[in-house]
Length: 251
Image (cartoon, rainbow, N blue to C red; front, side):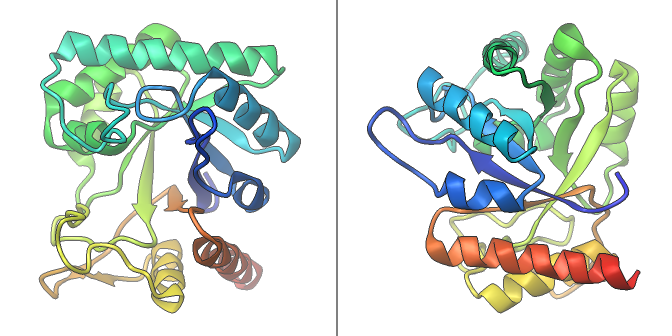
């Protein structure tokens, strides 16, 4: 990647229950992480989201999760490595089928919520996710958290013959190791638009962030996660897009 791409979670509605402002966010992002039915979404929503992404020339990514609709995929489940491999393979395959039906192509995979966090702490789970990608399509990049030192994840990806995309967050606080501060802690999520845009700008330019312990933290990232859950967050996404365009114009 030659520039920092914006990614956002999409297609998280379920039946008549609507979540997110996908139609407002899709035009200003590069990558759409489409829920695959285990933590949110349904086949109709998935296909409609793929169609919307295609209309705006946005790359579609699979956003697989633990089977946890009630907990929105944010609760760790006691799944074995084989179970993780198979549940990821199942979800990726389902979204790929809907992409094919819409004349689109699946472009990458980004696990969701607790599965995303668990795989960054547990090499066995990360390896299971990678086995699923290798079995389905080894050319699909895997999006993982951009920590202070991503060398272990890179080594494991090399063993599986996979490409990694490192992801940072504009609206989340980081600890000293470059991991996300738990949502249960005060200050874990930034709500001030100015703070969010400033953090995005720092990540894009390789400038240091301030970790939760006060230390400096530099993150190498290929993509930046943004959110579009409400009008305020959509406005922040648009401001981030403009800031990145300004950086590109002066670099």
